[in-house]
Structures are given as structure tokens and as C-alpha cells.
Image 1: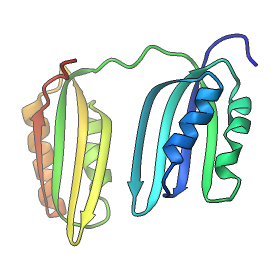
Image 2 (image 1 turned 90 degrees about the vertical axis):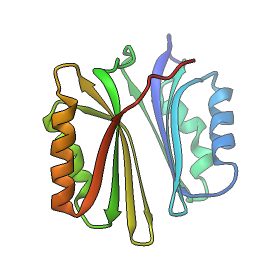
Image 3 (image 1 turned 180 degrees about the vertical axis):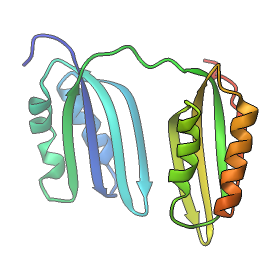
Image 4 (image 1 turned 120 degrees about the vertical axis):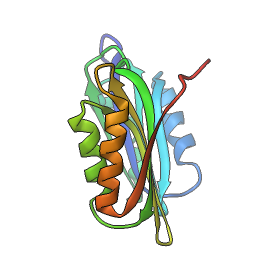
Length: 176
């Protein structure tokens, strides 16, 4: 065991089945790890999870403890240590960028490039394909210096080039 709490990033990827989350978090709890952040999703029958946990073990020790998850070859599990950092604070206001239209290669690349060129940071992104309809939803933090109306115009113009509709609206901050 290490001599102090470290931040561990754990990824679990593989064919979905019941119990992956329960099994993973049970093994981490057995190490005394505290789950601090997580995202989990099923993508076309495949499970994908990334979580951040604080623990008094090394990444190697945590990966060894999680080895039973990948024993049958259906899941890939990795653990890496990251430096403890203060959580990132939003750059300014948070916006939701929505894209709807016919699917084609390059949509995510083009839309996120416009956001990045403006200095925005994509903090959450999800996409879905339903038949021929492609949907992208992205939460974006924008620095106060960015003109959101100009960025919206730039995104709409990019959408026209791609043959999709793009819109952007401000998100109200979460109230706990």
C-alpha cells in the first residue's frame, strides 16, 4: 500500500452484461477507494465506464484487485494514477450545443473544432444514431471573452456545410 491518497482513473470496457458497475465498485470499495467522478454508458451493446477514485493504493495494486473483472476476457480494465489536482473550474458560462441531421463522417470533428478555435472547452459530449438521424449533444464551457452569438453563427455555418442543424443555448447552472 502507498503512504497517502492518490487519484486513480479506472476504465472498464467490453460487452455489456448485468453487474459490471456493481462488481467494479465492490472491488474498489474493498480497497477503501472513494468514488469521486464517473461516467458510464452502453454503446451499441458495449459497456464503457471511466471513473476517478481516491485510494491509498497504487494503480498497479488497484489493477490487480480489479483483475477478476477481466478474467474471462469479456472486459478490459485499466488503472492509472493521476496527479491530485483541484477540479477544473468552468471557463465562464456553460452552453449546450445540439446537432441534428443526416449522419456523415466528420460532424464531431468539425463542430468541436469550431468550439476549440473560439477557446471553448467541451466538458461532456454524447452522440446517437437513430436510423438516418444523427444527434450530438455537447456541454461547452466558454471563456467570458468569447462572443456566444458569434460562436453560434459560426456553428450554424459549419452545420450548413455539413448538411445538419446546429444550435447553441446557455445552460443554467446546477442548483444543489
